Amino acid sequence: MPSARNVVRIGLISDTHNLVRPEALAWLAGVDAIVHAGDICQPDVLEALARIAPVTAVRGNNDHGAWADELPVATTLTIGGAAIHVVHDIADLDIDASAQRIDAVVTGHSHKPSIVTRDGVLFVNPGSAGPRRFKLPVSAGRLIVEQGRVRAELHTLVA
Image (cartoon, rainbow, N blue to C red; front, side, top):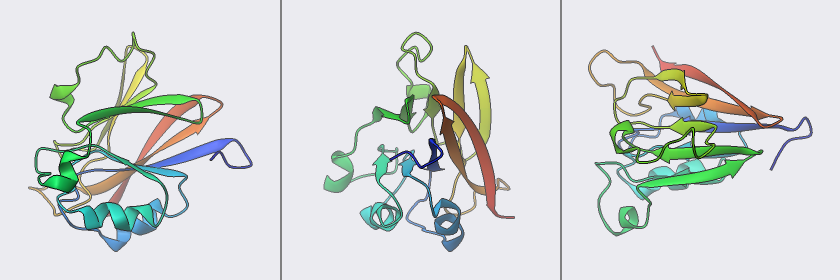
């Protein structure tokens, strides 16, 4: 999966609420993997994302039905030597990410994009790529993993 430069780019998306924006697909184009942090609402969203790169997704509070029951509430994956924990709502984080040597925690739910570091762990919420909520931006993000180090960036899809 790593590119020739040993840099892995992971697209981050959340709270699509059954809306696959062309701007989101353009932002995710060329990534090595995609993480969807829940509130997908229909499996077609995951199918559209899987045409770009392999998708890891967790179930959000608005994900219901047999397809959603197959999604984990939380998961940890390792990509490019970095451990990434994904859970829809930060309030449901039930691990000590620092003690478990997690490099990044990806969440959604609040629709508020943010990047913060706590106890050496990068916490990223890419915001909502779905319907606009209140006056919050429509956004997505990326994790860039290089030599086992992780950094994040956010991108406004619709101003």
